[in-house]
Amino acid sequence: MEIEIKLSPEKLFDEDYIRQVCAQTCRIPVNEIQALRYLKRSIDARKKPVHYVLKIKVFKIGEVQDEEEKGFELTPQKLNKTIAVVGFGPAGIFAALQLIELGYKPLVIERGKKVKERRRDLARLNKELLVNPESNYCFGEGGAGTYSDGKLYTRSKKRGDVRKVLKTFVDHGADSDILVNAHPHIGTNKLPGIIENLRETIIRSGGEIRFESKLTDFDISNNRISAIEINHQTKIEVDAMILATGHSARDIFELFNNKHLHIEAKPFALGVRIEHSQSLIDTIQYGMPERVENLPPAAYSLVTQAAGNGVFSFCMCPGGIIAPAATDIEEVVVNGWSPSKRNGQFANSGMVVTVNPEHWIKQYGDTPLSALQFQKDIEHKAYRAFNSIKAPAQRVNDFIENKVSGDLPSCSYLPGIGTYDLRTVLPGFISRSLSEGLAHFGKSMKGYRTNEAILVGVESRTSSPVRIPRDKETLRHTQISNLFPCGEGAGYAGGIVSAALDGMACAKATLVL
Image (cartoon, rainbow, N blue to C red; front, side, top):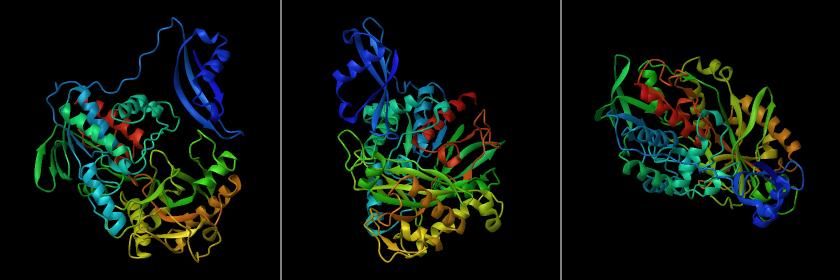
């Protein structure tokens, strides 16, 4: 029997009390309960006092318990085809695992470095402000998710087996709590080790992974990819290619454009990171002066229409930091992440505005790369504020009231911030929409609009500004019959889990070749 119960935070881990509540809800004696399986746990802060909602499956004595979820069942190679997986982020990792389960031996190529080597490049980025275009917060083993938070929440319930994705993470070192939490999160401190474990599973099961191996070209014959080129040198014959290069692999979009292959500009979102003290967000969301035991650092999700455009929070990071996410020189890009405990003093979130074709066509034309150029130019403007990856910043009220901040509060962005008029970096429609949207959010969340909060620019990599079109049924590229555009970079996912699901779907689609 599946039931829902409500609990105060103080009672969250009181097993005896939970059994009593379950028994009362099921109208059976406590001693008739054989076992409980927790299916989902969420926080309801809409009505005070704040409480938990638990979805539980109750097994009475004598009832057969369900089998636990399974991850991948990895089998020996039986299909003699070379399937190249380009990119080793979530889409590429799960595509490789799915290929192995199907009996293939995947060949994975990744332009960046292994996790531990990549960490050294991130340290240089934060301390010396030097961007390595092949090894950064976006490129390298595990993709952007490895060092930018590890949120596992998705709305893509119909796209595949979400539980299989989560169970695979648990099998490789993630806390089993992600199977129950309504908004599961691994944390940037734990993800690297999990990614390393996933790599070892793929290699141990027969897959091949090549790091510092960048896709630089591919040969096409009879509308099929016949070979791929790595680092302008090595050519490898392939039977198919799953392209899982992420939303920041701009050279891939340019390669497709130069080869006259179908790609198209698509809407995305762009704005800033907003940072408050975590204690303030806790007070606003929970309605209490201090967070009580068993309540995690509070999160929020905001959306409105302002000045004719959608404005919304994106990738909210309780207890997190703002990170430099540039992938090339002379650009400023910010993102956010949280450690597993989310115990930092700040809360940050993307605060972005929807960018549609009418916003870029007038200046950049109606071309496949026009939205990408729009995105690039704003990142370059942000860089030119200080000719550095030091980020332009402004207090929230000052921005709304169109004032340059005289000084700035403390901020988690390690490369440093400087006071600057963000309206000179952002296009007018984004500035107007952000200003109205922030004023609106200040009314719905009392205290959110404050000059102790800060805006840091620019948050521009919310999703890919380019889509690589594919057939909805076969998942094949519209021109190349053995090319499977995949994940965030191709425009078909929006996070770790949805990218993983898309990677699995593309791997399955190769079976018909």
